[in-house]
Amino acid sequence: MKLSFDVAGGAPLAVTLTDLVVAGWAGRDMAAIEHHIEELFAIGVPRPSAVPLYYRAAENLMTQGDRIQVIGGETSGEVETFVFSAGGDMYVSLASDHTDRRLETQSVALSKQICAKPIATTAWKFSEVADHWDALIIRAFIEENGARVLYQEGPLAALRPPSELIAGFTGGAAALPEGVGMICGTVSAIGGIRPAAAFSMELEDPVMGRILRHSYAVDVLPEVA
Image (cartoon, rainbow, N blue to C red; front, top):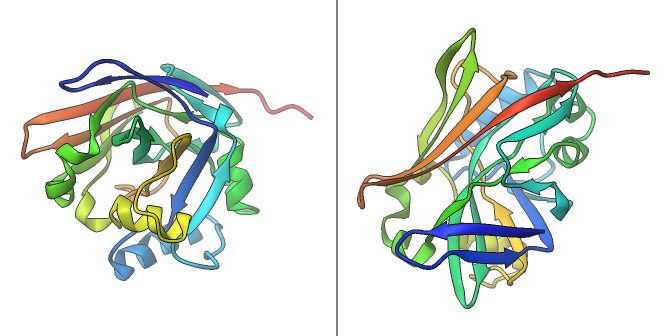
């Protein structure tokens, strides 16, 4: 999948990613992980076999558009950081691990494969935020009853750092191979996991005073038999 990013302080970047990895159960605090596991268990999702887990998804699910289409009304987004390597540097952007929640009760892996994965069009060099990674904040808003509602918010200190997730996936290497994109885990939903017609996400760097943003609408297609 060919993606394009506007990189802060640098030239526009075009990359071709051939593999997509979704790091699940990526919390740093086991109590927080258990909370998220219980949050999903409440809607019927089985407990994971290991923590973290590395789900694979088709690379053509990645999209930088402002709209996705889903089957049925039981899907929802999750704000996450997105990391990839290009030209010897690692970059960080934003992604939504949009997931079919009904299918998730049967197979987490298939529920992730069934939905598009929105990716932001802006990015930072990882080296610019590595020394204050834990201070970065991810948040998401949904459209609910005509209002913009805060849906997720938390510091990246609550999640395993990318170097640890990458090493777990690669068997020890600290950087992703070029061509691989990794979605790096999320924080709990405020008020519970639920669908929405629109999803907005942010990655805030309070140290350098900047924010990455991306939004998308969700079109629900009819489920026919």
